[in-house]
Length: 151
Image 1 (cartoon, rainbow, N blue to C red):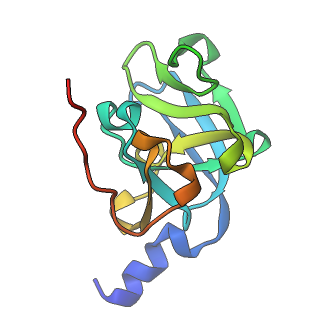
Image 2 (cartoon, rainbow, N blue to C red):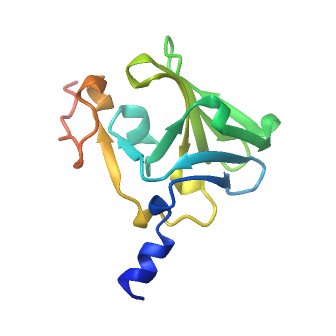
């Protein structure tokens, strides 16, 4: 495969596109209109525990749940407006939603690993420091240093 072949298949170079995705068992299916040039990873405890492969956010009207409302379970921390939605059958976390004013308000965030026909290894990630609620620092091109919590 030549570099040119890779560039043609890199979804980050396509701009705003509609992608389909869902869980492993197929009970949950969705469509999202996003630009995969803006994918991120976060180091908050929820993302780290979920093995967060990265995602991209959008305004709620750019996300459409096609199937599986009855199969979705949500997890969120007490007091947080943000949740993660996963399939109660296979356990795959497909998307999250919430409201973070520092990031533009209400959002839906899809996990790029759940997209059909998208190779996440072709994407370039930005990194958030969610572990320290350091949203104002913005994205950076390398992961934030891990600082263990002292018990």
